[in-house]
Length: 255
Image (tube, rainbow, N blue to C red):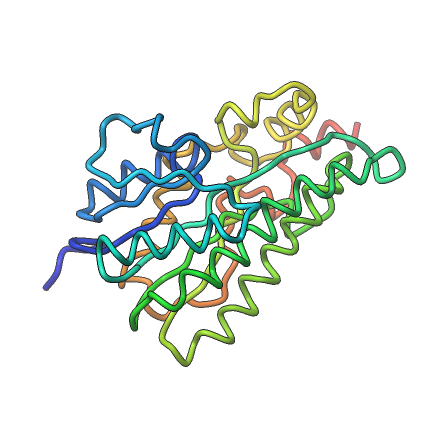
């Protein structure tokens, strides 16, 4: 019997793998035996903890850049077994009425279109029993005040995930998404996001935001053959946030 969740000799492309969730995922999948391609803006210069990986610069808003990433991976390794779409943008904390078109453009071009185009260009190099994991958000499963541009782009990621799961099922390529709350990364702590963090620390039943390693663990499961019948799913990694507000937050509002 094979070791659970092993990824030995699997060729894994992690887009956005140089920081935050992507970096934690790269470290975990490398430890599980995966052979990594770490892609992102300035990926070549980042060299995450000197992991044994192929580093490739990519701009997910540029379709040619994504196409070249997949072609280079194929030239080096002959296939792509796992694709992790972890590049993300959180642009703008404003109401729908106050938001600007640029905020939508920035979020959609990275979160939604970048995900769709990465899938488009990776699939021709993916054999049977491959896996695609998209990093969405709990904001893709509900409305979130002040985050209309982000939330709508993450809803789009889930639409892309479920549609791709239907279209690629006959090729035995599974497509799933993870949906975290805020995660303890530099992007979550960027200026403007403080109220969101304070709200989640009170409303999440576990009383805190997530850690990148906790999201990476779920990505690891979805990348492995142990999840071979999981397809088209949006897996919450949210401390219970999607189940409802914490009892502490409930009691505060009830007073």
